[in-house]
Image 1 (cartoon, one colour):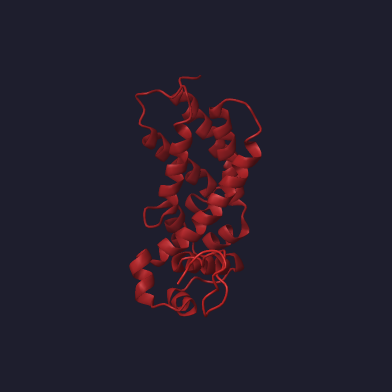
Image 2 (image 1 turned 90 degrees about the vertical axis):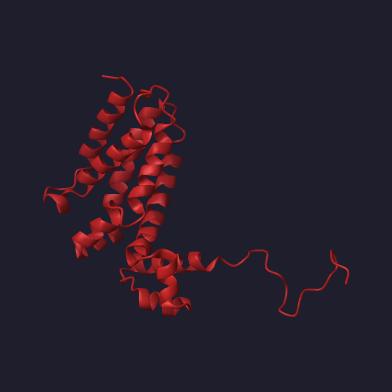
Length: 206
């Protein structure tokens, strides 16, 4: 059989130019839609509607917390993309850009209704997904912050970038979710101010 231009499509019809999404991605797409709609992400229902076994879900992700964490991280990653794209035109120093973007992201996340609803429905569980090692959100936030810190030309070389990134993320969590943690109102502005202090100190600025 000769392949190439002029060959006929197979018995299933013309080949699609867009390959189907991997099964895992389609499952997260479904969970993402449920999350935005306020629907509980139940592993049994997710498996059933995805056409796979519940055991397979747990083998791929390990826990419901990780599945929800993947959904939350998609929301945050999309927000990061928008925030950084809006700020790309500004030509100030990288430290100022990072602090400003962190503050904008903190406010965006804290006021995103599906996220605030999710945490309000079960605060302990919500914080476990958002701010602990049980999920993927905190680790990926630390990765993002660390990647931006490496762009800062004046960072003290004695400082471990990942340690500083961890400190920045934890400070942000403490103020962004302060109503859940301490009962104080959310304070994204204070989170931004504290992050600015950390970055300034690490860069030798006063």
